[in-house]
Length: 61
Image 1: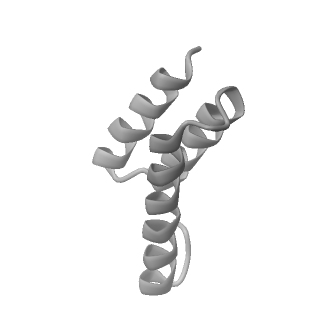
Image 2: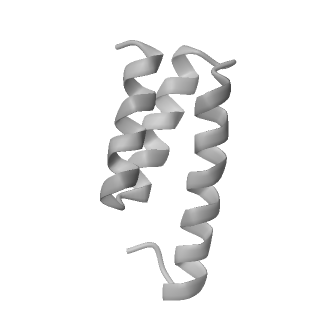
């Protein structure tokens, strides 16, 4: 699959609130295209969002 497709999937899952899957999509995207700047930025946002969720809820689930 192309890097752009993984990036787009990450955006879709982000809109659904599934942060674990979002991060997995961006990891796959960056494995295919390590210099994909949009995916790097989106991954950073997803990791911050997950960190905030963990702090707020006390766990990932």
